[in-house]
Length: 288
Image (tube, rainbow, N blue to C red):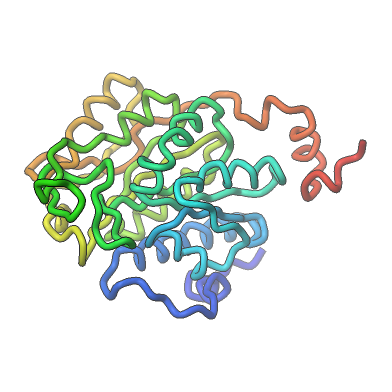
């Protein structure tokens, strides 16, 4: 198969819609990383039509308009069940879900936790800017303590943020990683690993917000890449807990923190295995 260059395939992954993110928003770089990852997979034999996506509601969700693959806009907090629905409808597709920190860890928290239990073969990419930026800066569960906003009665968030990676590990999610939106090349490599993983893959993408959460920005100096994936949960926990999502000097590890193989949701249904085995496009092609 003739390989396409990144630039050539970027054009096929482009859409006609004008991008409306704020100038300088790291979502531009996440979009670039997604295109790099998909292009790399296409050069390995995947087809553009092999991919489909689900998104939630938020700044991240606009990626649906700018990335030329099939999919659905979900409801707020419902990117994960929408993605699982796509996978159950056609398990031969590579399903990607894009969501935000408010989208995933507020309204969608129960779906995030359950995803670890079910282990559907999908990849979730969470754009985490630690604020509800589309609705002009309300706090999310990952917003730093002291985050100034119009919601809390004292004008700032009084509680500590959650650690999504710790939550993912305790929920049994089988692929857990963190990336930096400002490094699209490395983010693309992590995205590609997540898509290839057989089971539920979760990648948190740390991004700045250039308008509604400026104090948390510019964390690159604290970031470093893991040399290898931890082989024990004790080691993974130690690395995950280095960053508490507050403003400070704590180290922020990037890379894959945990990966294991476990039977997937699709493995439990003979009908889905039949669709996968016969490479038919969903239930209509299934012989009864």
